[in-house]
Length: 218
Image 1 (cartoon, rainbow, N blue to C red):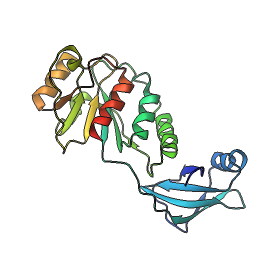
Image 2: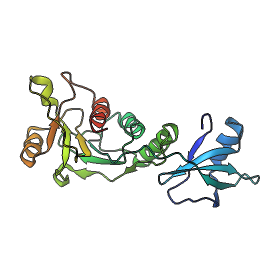
Image 3: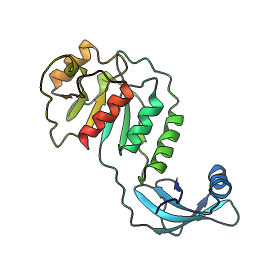
Image 4: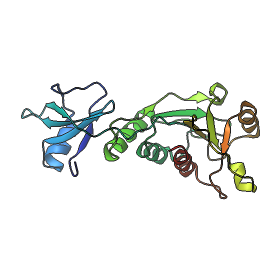
């Protein structure tokens, strides 16, 4: 349904529930959008919903026929300076899981992850998905599971090698930080059989590299 606000209300709602209304959401709906009606979503489902007259509660109505367009893609990524853009784009593209990985050249260590979750919620509301991607706590590169993983391999930008085809069972992709992967990390990825994929013949900003890498799995 076009022009009807979409609001994330949590992952455990069902038709007929009355839930507390967030003050900022009520203000946005009534005073900005001039409506009490909206589409509530979460957990992969979408419902009609309405702010009740008390202005403090929301009634969850019938489930809509809109299915969640989200796939089963996991994005592993090194935290970067423009991480807002990365989280926004990955959410819009339908990534299910966001898993930060601390690599040797990661420089953005002090990330406000609660703010990143807020950005993901807002991007989900705008992009017609019925779920918000789960953002996990950062892990070191040494703890990364390399089985069934592909990674953005900037080495393709420096030679004429043919890009590797991505096996259909691979649904996880890793992108590095602004400075790229280290020699040691490349050796680890290669020896483990992780699949390097080409993003073209130019060196891309990390957030754009993430978006293009995700597109390779869609």
